[in-house]
Amino acid sequence: MTLSTDRFEIVAKHTMAPEIIRFEVRAPRVARKARPGQFVIVRVDERGERVPLTIAERHVERGTIAIVFQAVGFSTRQMAAMDIGDSLADVLGPLGQATEIERHGRVACVAGGLGIAFMYPEIVGFSDAGNEIVSILGARSEDLLFYVDEIREMSAKVHICTDDGSAGRHGLVTDVLCDLIDAGEHFDYCIATGPLPMMRATCALTKKHDIPTLVSLDPIMVDGTGMCGACRVTVGGEVKFACVDGPDFDGHLVNWDELAKRKRAFAEEEEVCRLETAADALEHERSEEHG
View 1: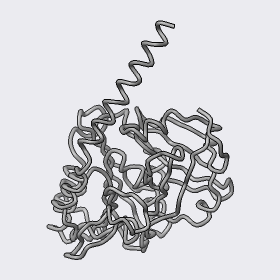
View 2: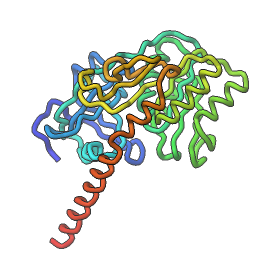
View 3: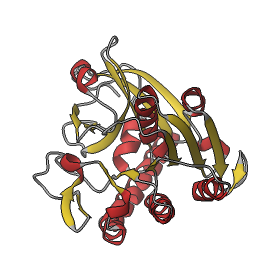
View 4: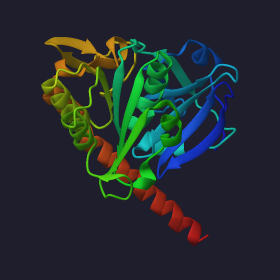
């Protein structure tokens, strides 16, 4: 696949885990201005869907940023088919509010699944600010873990857990955090990123122990400027737009029930699109087999 523009050229591509891919993209202006917690909206081509992705890394000297995505939907599978030398049609950003990074003391960084990509720049920022980082990383299985070595370099301790027990502890990230607290470990602050149920459960636990908790939300987004209202969330009884007011919020104030319902709004349409794409790919494969 070769696209017409070279402004947002993919200069590196790496499969970090099954269906989880890291692109390093040439975007010097974004690289200069981006801060932890911010994101970009990308499009594969002029007709493509607008996909919000966290700026996982920025390399000012190279004029590049790194984005990490999981090829699970129509647009992300399109992206996964791209290669080094191809160019994205759009990379809009940096968007959202940068994370308020302070020296809190001992910080628990709890991440699950693709949330590890969201967490990585947060750990960089809070570590640079002089905090002691205790990282708790979870995934379905060992092969779905990534950024572990990089995070270990910045953490006083890294705890790994997997759903199937293939690496670290057999269980959930919240189990690890609960056991650490019960064992008497003190945390001044917590950051949670990942699947909504995981963030919700983490916040329920930290609220019980009065540990301030920051979450990074990823509701449905369209324009990324707060005009469409698609990403609205209720925080502390007030309507917020994740793209301009967030994506970071006080996890103890998020209306998790409402957010869960909104994230499922287009599940049926996404499944139809996925099935149509799979059918087209099968038909293409058959046509090639028959010449």
